[in-house]
Amino acid sequence: MSLLLGCIADDFTGATDLANMLTRHGMKTIQTIGIPKGDIPDAEAIVVALKSRTIPAAEAVAQSLEACRWLKAAGARQIFFKYCSTFDSTDKGNIGPVADALLDELAAPFTIACPAFPENKRSIYLGHLFVGNELLSDSSMRNHPLTPMRDSNLVRVLGRQTKRKVGLVPANVVARGSEAIAQAFAQLQKDGVQHAIVDALQDEDLFSIGHAASAMALVTGGSGIAMGLPDNFRAQGLLAKRDQKVSLAKAGGLSAVLAGSCSVATLKQVETFKSRAPAYALDPLILIDNLDNSLAEVMAWARPLLAKGPVLIYSTATPDRVAEAQGRLGRDKAGELIELAMARLATMLTTEGVHRLVVAGGETSGAVVSALGVEALEIGPQIAPGVPATLATGSPRLGLVLKSGNFGGPEFFSEALDALS
Image (cartoon, rainbow, N blue to C red; front, side, top):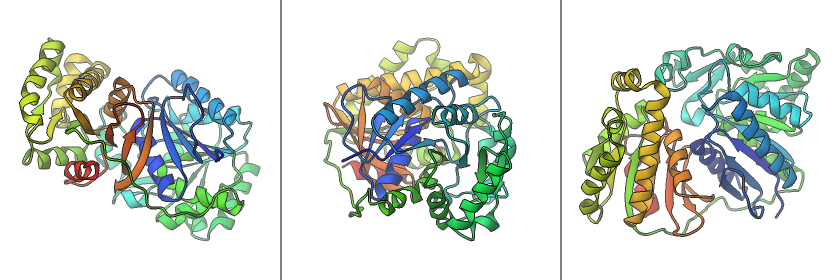
């Protein structure tokens, strides 16, 4: 089996989302945690999960270039740079700087930027990103603690991150199919555009856009745009058609949920699950005084409960409480403290026999899998759009569900644990 598509994801849950999409559309996909240090995994698509969304832009560029070079050396025929379907970023990066660096690395003249994922209520119209029926700038992402998104015009947002010209392929062109889209790409290149935001209102648009991008060395976007990429390799005779049903071996063991996201969706999931399982709320204002003692108290609470069923440990809070913690500790320190606490709790829980773990929040997921020493994930069946069950390679085999904060319905935690059972 030869590698066809090499993917670079800027956070761990986003990587899992993309790996899930490619698996659903018939590519054997492996997600690696960071750049593999051993043999090249046997897969048609490899998704390298980085934790680069909110680090300084120069570091994100360096890590992404290293991943790109590894993927090229492994034989990847096309590179995909995956970021969040809400275009999480700041005016200093990191989407624009990383995309620019990858264009240079691949000697590519042009790429697209399409974070749309209509199945998850992310659509783009005339360059404006919508979350459901709301503009991004009016959604809960407006108050995201790390990457507040207060401008829904992606042409404008990306234009502030790159010195290269940014253009648009509007919905009326996309609706005419892949040939019309490819013609629009060609015209934009003649006009000196190197980044094109592409409208998408429904899943069929994503297939058309993906097909039009067949010859591109670099594609950038959310996981949705990857829908059309496997068919490009099939059209070239490089990828067989196969049954899309996937299954995972069972990890067994005890189970727990760690929720570090402050998204509206995760707030609802926490409240729903608290009525069914014992729950413990972490408070960064208490953790800062004595982290070791605080974590010891959490584990003393959890140990007698684990044998009876799953436990929930959460730092999820309202925007007002988040703002209070950030005001006292600083934005970055408050976030890092929660990530450290969740990572250490994950290692403590696994030593107690927890082998099935649901983690909510991209930054939290990254901290947890790094602390657990996970090197790669096998991708299993989808639980909710963008979120599959996974099985960590190595020993012990850990069943993991890594969820972006905004994904899943109110019953998600119960559904995820059922999928790992």
